[in-house]
Image (cartoon, rainbow, N blue to C red; front, side):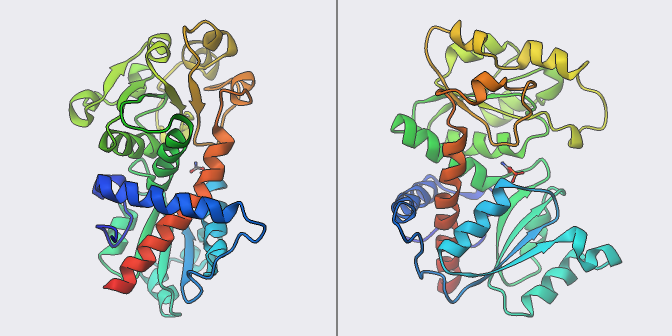
Length: 310
Ligand code: CP
């Protein structure tokens, strides 16, 4: 059964069946990645461009590795080293790249809706690698895949998303993804970093009390303070933030059960997570990164297959 979408622009557009299909496909690719030769010829006739208008370490390398593991031809585009700096528009840039017979575009952009806009103006399929504060669909898929791997299922699990909810595309995609699978979600952070409409609009619990959220949850997905997206001070200092919303060893040891700690990266150590938590056996942060390659292989395979079908 194919995906219900031509592009992967956001989790909002996916059905539960799409998510399950991506996970089943990723299970198969995870097996491939355990072999001595971690490569399959699946996309050897496909050319993919990684179009990054914003900085990235994990997502960019993970997509490139996934493309290479599938034997695709890969082009990397960095806005800061391109003719965008000479005033070329987004559509002109992409159409010039597509004129060189590119099949699939992976795009990260600081503007919300940039990949949605592009999808209406070009023929190639697009995968959103993060657009502003809107969505980061492959991050949410790899997060849920990692919970499923660790706890057996996502349905019925209690997940706390901790920190800067307002400026986080990871939070938005995770909420859609977890709710579609039947998980319960609580967002926790300072009132200034949680949108007022959150509980009603997104169907999540809201609390400003970190200990209460951690006592309740099975999994805490901890977010970075996204200072680059804040245009006014929303809390007094990083030190104060760490005191009230940072996760320390002492806080975890005082809970009544052992919870799983996740983080999409990059971590600001000593702010949202202390090192003795980030590097502890409760943390599955590096498993998330590992699973990102299998998830992105699955997404590329399914989106490329959908394109061939059209
Ligand atoms: N998780 C994530 O998107 O990290 P990067 O910004 O390094 O890609």
